[in-house]
Image 1 (cartoon, helix red, strand yellow):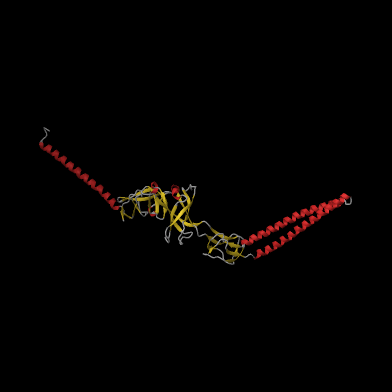
Image 2 (cartoon, one colour):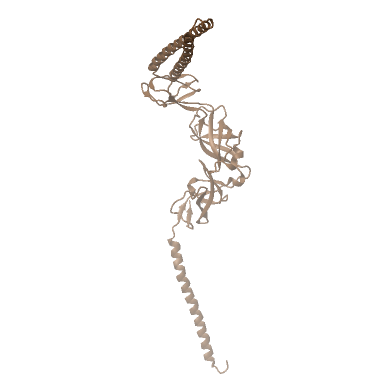
Length: 390
């Protein structure tokens, strides 16, 4: 630095200091200008108020039950029809009435059919008499042929008379066959008329209750037109489907719980009596039938909506969690989207779902116990949106 005056050296240092200060000021101004848009963006974001549902932790003590919706049914229920055409003359059992097997429930007008039966029976008697007469004539023809044969041996009879007697016998034999066939046909017609007459009376095919009435007295009915519906009251059955993985819990002999949907009566026990051996390829499920164990509450009747709970149907590895149906938006047969609250923002997540029941939808994978999800979806919610939990 020799040869450079001191004041020059000091001036250079001052310039450097001023340059550094300017750089710091410029950087600060740039930073402030960059923060202002970010702050403005944050201020412009909409904060959504959401209600959350906390996913319950998995129960490690036992497998979870499976709940499915169904209806009560009976093994035997039939619509009683008019098997013949006729006017409905009488209904002896109305709706709500209990009846026994074989009891008369309704009658059709059979007056015309009875007249037809009388005519057919008279025709049959006449044909029977003709058949007997033909048999008598055959016997006479046999005697005449025998006599002509003896005369021929003695040389007293002619060949023409013998042939005439033989032809007459053959003719009478044919008449006997013909008369017998006509008589059999007439008897068959009478029997058919008697069957039709019996069908004019509508009787109960089993013990039950008249659950519906279709026709009115005096109405002209066609064949196969409905008259009454008869329903068996006991035993009560419930049919339901379970996934293939729950086959062990719904095997024949297993006991399930049946809850009326209207909660009018308490839960009942039912024992599985049939389990399908064939799995439906489309749904991956199989059908089961359970019979309610007696005594059954009087309020339980066929057609009532119920929930069937199968204990131990879902193994621990598949138990997952049950969440409100309103929290999910289905995207496929076994997939759905939901929003998880992560801190103060939403995170969209796709999960695998299982069976749906009155208590909610089963989530098989994609959620953990303790996570918070939006309890009710809205079209306004988006991935990454800030939220405020109510």
